[in-house]
Amino acid sequence: MRTTTSPHPTLLVVAHGSRDPRHAATVHALVNRVRALRPGLRVETGFLDFNAPSVPRVLERLDADGVRDVVALPLLLTRAFHAKADIPAVLQEAAVRLPRLRIRQAEVLGPSPLLLGALERRLYEAGVRPGERGSTGVVLASAGSSDPEAIAVIAEIAREWRRTGWCAVRPAFASASLPRTEDAVRELRAQGVRRVAVAPYVLAPGFLPDRIANGAREAGADVLAEVLGPAPEVARLLADRYDECRAAASLEPALTA
Image 1 (cartoon, rainbow, N blue to C red):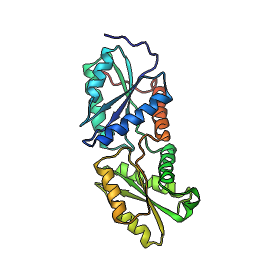
Image 2 (cartoon, one colour; image 1 turned 120 degrees about the horizontal axis):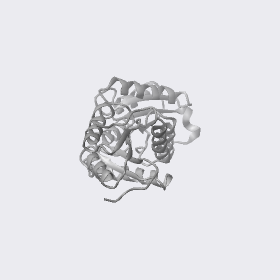
Image 3 (cartoon, one colour; image 1 turned 90 degrees about the vertical axis):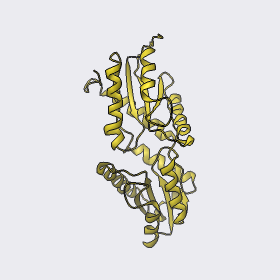
């Protein structure tokens, strides 16, 4: 067994996983950017499904290496099913099997001003100029959820983002909820918005992000931004959530047997 000597908890980024190889490649690019931000921090990646290594396998390896403290950070934008049920169950099961390992679950990434910054970065990269904010309507297109809390968060983000100077901001969803991206684009057109941009509020490519992109093209959106991916703001946010979880360690119980 290799014993770790790091004074800092290991950061375990917990991603959903996908059959689409672009998903894992994007997650790894984001994690590498976090490593560059925190060169003294051990950062690992585990997946819930489809990709390797799995979260339990990574935790077993950390335990074998002598790691005793882990911050598990869900790579999620809202607190929906995976953050409330899937991930806690996986971490709790691991805590029972690996009683020497202290595991804490950090908060999900959103909402955060840093994510709005990443969304705007992607819009500008796609061709929107800062001076066009007042004449551009934006569709904030998320993956969608059946969780009312997650849907309410997306709606609130759209309202807050609208106040920063965009002509209009409408939420849209690729699954589970309405409206779809194409419907939101058409709604903005019907209201007289002449320039419409679609900003995917998703972290990595895959089936649902492709559905967002197809809806944007079908409805004739003027601009389609890329997914958030390894944007610098997203990497900073991961580091911030890690720090927040560490700061709260004295107040919150660890997941132990």
